[in-house]
Image 1 (cartoon, rainbow, N blue to C red):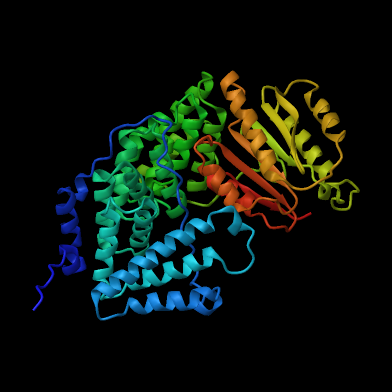
Image 2 (cartoon, rainbow, N blue to C red):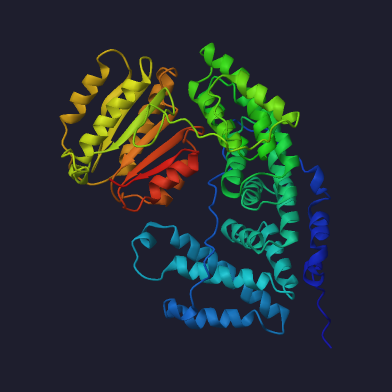
Length: 528
């Protein structure tokens, strides 16, 4: 009789003790004592934050290209085989196929392909594997995925695909694996594990991310992770939120508007009570910084707006009424959230976007469709945009820094960076109306030119650079939401910049909505 082969520990143990095996494999590390890696340069990112997976059910196998029917059916049948060796082999091949198809789906050819392609094949396989991982008898599959993640001999994309599958399965041992890998793995696996944490709201994972940020709040990578976790899944648990507050207090009074703006975005991850406390106890320092010319006016304005949103009260930019109100809240005299007042309407408006900053760049659509008639007054969309732009600048008053970029099939800086002074708006009106709408709707060209000019200003003279962009478009853009998500995720994107977007008409606005949502700005649709 042939000798019986010894099974690996991960093959033979049930899922409930996989966490212990993992810790023994890499060295014991209690989750509560997880320590982030040592500080890295502030400009370093952990890599592109993958976006949440598509939650739609995968399409039927018969809807995929025919060449996949037999191959996938054989491998899926293998997952149900009595032999664990066969099941593991099938799962391994499916994981490799998934990784390869996902890579193809991200390539340029797949984007122009019509009908089911690599993305659909990958989604189908992903759906089937995650379903298998969730079964009661799926301990073998969890163990196989864990082994694949930890196997340094494997190709990186295979290891990362296996890690993604474990996270999607929401198996408790996957949480342990993320904590272990983020401390004891190689640098790329650490980064991948931390990125995965930002997509899984779970107490121990939130604590790890919050501790990493608290230890090094200027590190771009930790800022991105916390901001993405908050933006995608809402408030952190109370313990994790408490760890953020000391660092946020320092960031919000920074002379660099990007740091202060990012602090306000991250603070949205606090509970309503903690958020109100942070804003009220920080607003006086911010107001003093604005008075001294060290902190941007936009930061103070944003704080007052967020307090108004939380409380339903309208006390303006003076810290004292907010502090007095909060003392009454603490004393139990008033509720934190009482909607007994209407928010005051700003006298400064651009298609519903109120006063957002004293340092603003306008990115305006100059495509051929902007020559359409606006309402019943006889003016065009473009002429109305110019009228509202001039009125906005007039109401903002002297000392406001601004720039205007126009986009159609390409982009051009129509008005270079300058201050609003006497006669400025007449010059802007004349310059803008010399140009007639024509061409396509290359939003990307306009936004990227504006970002390039703003980065140049930041190097030359930080005083004038824009901390807010107002973008107006009237039609379907050449770019979609994925373009906007990639732009915001790029390593040179200025964290803390706000995009406020106005969509005229009923055209799809995926890119515009993604720009606003991804930066904490406002999206407004106007139907003439």
